[in-house]
Length: 173
Image (tube, rainbow, N blue to C red; front, side):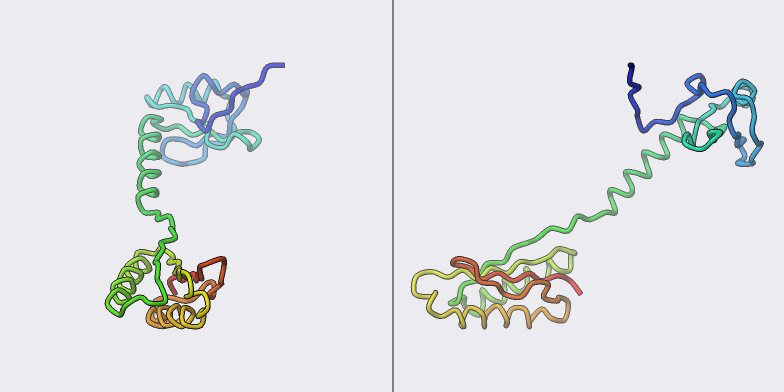
């Protein structure tokens, strides 16, 4: 049993092997159900290609068009959509219970920039040694950080303590 390799490319011209197709002419008007030979002749007459645009319907829909131009425009559309898309990343801001005011403000500014770019911000409060005895101080710093950003961000995940760190996730409103 031979398997046919399926690709995303539509069948063009002689690769269309079915007896009849529903034909759409070069101006976009529906001609109707036509024998494939006649549709091929019409396409050649116009100096264009016969392209199967809906292979799953019965009979398949074929359109008379310039296949090279069609491929080029589709490629450009895909490139344009990729250019406009933005994958959301999780950016990390690390704090300590003893983080000074200036460092706090700098990290706050960085987090604000990440949120404005459309990324999520994970706030990590790191504890060392005896700082673990004062989790309330660390929680207070994390809550102060999230309150300072509440105009553009909301808390997706509240502060959770895991091991020696407390994490909190912020996303843009």
